[in-house]
Length: 109
Image (tube, rainbow, N blue to C red; front, top):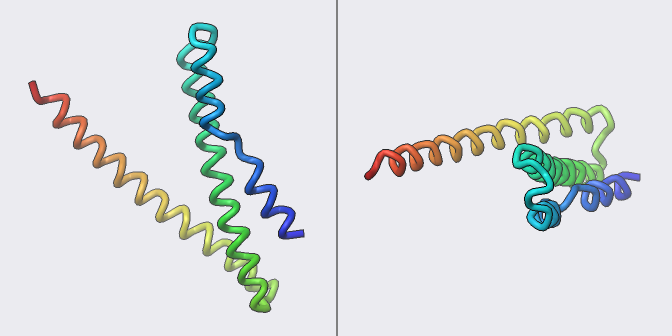
């Protein structure tokens, strides 16, 4: 059962590249704000699929080592917590770095 869910997490996210190419062909028909929301949603779904795949894969690999069911939920929560914390740190760090670059770039003549 877990292999089927793992495969579903692998193939289910929307491909952001195809969404962007479709929206570029329809320029003028769809408002820019709606286009931005659709692209952001596609990227978010893609990242969610990657996180779900990685979590299920680690759970599957741990279950091969005779992981007890009581410990399985703790391991899943730990893995998701690590991904959440490190993802936020990387996101804030990259965002702040981009903010600094843009601030310097926009202030220069």
